[in-house]
Image 1 (cartoon, rainbow over the protein chains, first blue to last red):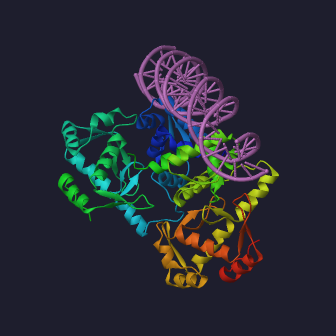
Image 2 (image 1 turned 180 degrees about the vertical axis):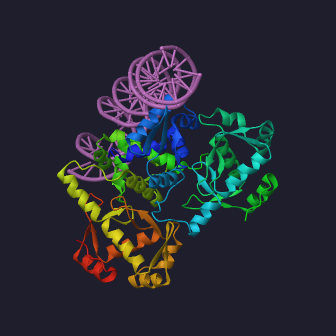
Image 3 (image 1 turned 30 degrees about the horizontal axis):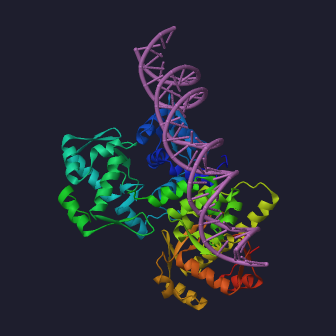
Length: 229
Length: 229
DNA sequence: TGGACGTTTCCATTATCATCGAAATGTGGA
DNA sequence: TCCACATTTCGATGATAATGGAAACGTCCA
């Protein structure tokens, strides 16, 4: 591996929105073809290729050629953990397994994944939205149906505004604790922001864990038909 | 609003080499006049001033005016820890000169990480405290056990006072030279302060490096069962 | 009071870099 | 063999931002 890594180059990976989106998408630990990553970040294949080459040079990602596809993945699992922590505000990375710890339980429950909600709560919300017919899964996309348009507008989201952003509008993101999908993309971010604004959730200090408030429990039961715990 | 303003803003700050140099210089936790930082980064005072203003605006550094000097320092310990985290990601910088490698050896050995000790000595201390059952790792937390309460009190630390501080009490921080954890948080700071008060360590001028005194070697052998070098 | 010095502000220049169109490369399938 | 498709390379563009010269500001000191 080229030790071309210096602090600034690592930091620039995270500070650029397109690269952050790509990294975020790679955080599921699986391989993704370059085109998917381009779509995920809302950029053209050329641009994605440019970014991926840069990341490969730094040894953050590795490539595997299969036929005419090139599959990218994060080179080391330990890097993946560190990236997720950095993306969603970081403390030092745990080297040992966190499986049984208290902190881990909290993270399983609800946490931030870069700019949107993850964990059990997020997975349940995504399920509920699909069951109600507001979202429809189409590959990696989560299509917003007509009833979904009304639902999100009623929920206080400005969908036209969210669509304008230079990033994928609505995607699913594999939740590494639940092994199910939750909602990501501009819509996931907007929904999360709205729920925070309504004080459904509160961030814990020094952690990406998220605490669900009493309002949150009530709201999730009323709006999504979800009862947690 | 961005829910992770900290990360992306800090990352974009560090992604510029000049600012990275400034921040790295500030990682010693001391105050530095603007001119020194300019020299450290190899840029003119105007440019340094421009960068420092930007960092101050984001709240990552704070200024203190003393006479015609303005002293800058990193505002929050958590930001400093995040930068260290990025350093551990980047890995050790390539050594160019003999003088640098000499300096590097010293930094590996013992250095300041903003307000607490880092480097081999700090990692060994953290290990020793866990082996003795005074600390117990729980995710990112380092829990102080009953025997630990007694140990630290006997060592001269006022734990109740440290707990009151508006920051994480006891946590681990990934050491970028050793790739192991050392003790951070209020407890790490307090322990470091106490050891300095006992003259176990002395800071080198103009550097993050820390020198271990004869008392320090003796004390660490007696209290922690550590023999360095 | 005047001059030296540390620092900042203003401004014009320059460098960097993400971005995408066009074209090239390489692979699979018909 | 030819075409479709995924991806990369090349080249140009435009936006952003770093940079340092000139000058102003404040503070210290003689």
